[in-house]
Length: 232
Image (cartoon, rainbow, N blue to C red):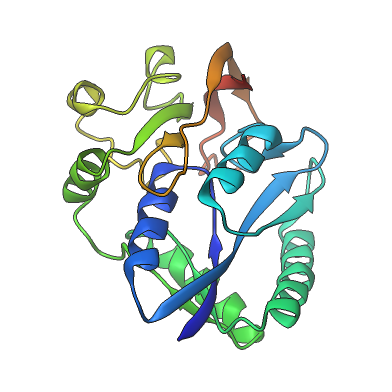
């Protein structure tokens, strides 16, 4: 049996990857790991409140570890915090494998595997190179339910944030947007599905546009619509 921890993001790709790895008899998942912005108590990138993250972990029923980051962090500091935190998690849990929900971003996978190699861990990618149209259809057919919590404002307008992922949502997406948002077009919060004991109750809060400083070459997307979710 291969002992692994799962990198939990709160979103749909993460949920589907966890579902698949839990079905794989070669692996045992003994921990979920999530990065959290310490100042705002929200999941990094997705912006999901920490109390909803905690509720997800409770309904999944797997021990949950959180790695906290300051509001602003350099890549050097990020790598330092991650290495120290993961080393501690691995030492306490005797893990050999780290599972991710990535689908086709080659550079991201290489970055992850290079960092894992530094601490003698092996990366596992249950969704790797699968057709995203097939994946989103499988996600929905399994009974998973998710809502968008952030969208790239360069590609999607305000109407796409705070929407339930369903067939109509997929049909409404522009042709240049991946149906799983694998290029960072949108992020989601999963609130129901076969990995949960009970659905997670929430209500929709404020929708805001946040713009961040861009780099000199303007190569990074820096404007996003966010939808706040409030635990009921």
